[in-house]
Amino acid sequence: MRVYFNRTVLVISLLVYLSVFVPPSSIWWTGFVSLAIPFVIVFNFFLLVYYITISKRVLLYPLVSLLIAFPFIKATVAINPNASPNNHDFTILSYNTRFFKDIKTQNYGKFSAEMMHWVLNDSADIKCFQEFYSHPSFPNLDMLNRLKANGYQSHYLDLTPEMRTLHGLAIYSKFPIVNKGNLYFNDHTFNGAMYVDVLIAKDTIRVYNIHLRSMGLNSNEIMSPEIKDKYKDIAQSLQAGFAARARQINQLSEHIDKCPHPAIVCGDLNDMPYSYTYFKLRRKMRNTFEASGIGLGFTFNGKIPFLRIDNQFFDEFFEADFFNVEYDAEHSDHFPIKGYYSIR
Image (cartoon, rainbow, N blue to C red; front, side, top):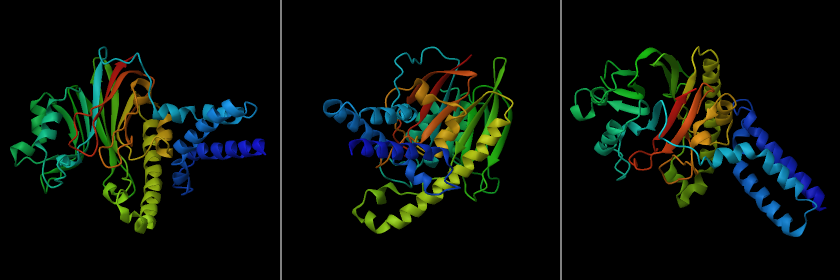
């Protein structure tokens, strides 16, 4: 009976793990199944501990499950004792600034002078922003020219001529930008991707800045007692988000395949490390947090604090020396992330 139970658990575990390889745009429920991965890992861990003390004859089953789950464990906890920010060729900051609206005081309508000050004084060589904002008519809000004055003469952004304001993605660089472009997702959303080809010494590299479809969830509602009345709406929002991000990451993947230069991908994935989105990129590139981070690396600054949805990925042309989540910048609903890289 015990053997039958463990075989069943092992088979279920394998099916849950395999869900990250199936796009939710094709089979919608795989997005929900992948959310169970951390719980399956924890269950198998306690099962292993239990069998070590009770019945060593069947501990092979949870042990095999945990060994197969190693990529998910590695995506959850980073252990890189030799990682160091001291030796690197360049750094990249990725930050969802939420249009510089201040959530530190829960005043969503007020611009955050502290957040702007932090962005201006950060020393990263390349800065990728999601939900960026700039308005030339007000000196304090003219982040385009304020960043240029701080040494970021090369930049790429989408300026709306009629409103003379910028909403969306932006990349600033201390290095020369020799080429640039956009990748618009076919989902009728404001999400998208942009890229720049940057010249560092004699090497040209490509940096992608991406912002995938939002989860469509309000953290205040999820943490409220009335959540039981909104299960259906939450499920529908999650389902739509899973499918949209699967389509978007597939478009991005095809674009990266045609890229003529070594590439780094930065941005807000709006998806967990146990998703088709994350593992689609992970099969193509290495994740900077996994390669050079320390700890859990949560990046969401909200009422659901255990989410890591902001990421950087790099290809084999680079070496990731260090990865850090900048927890001192607590004004947006995302923490900035910074990767330190060397060119091989």
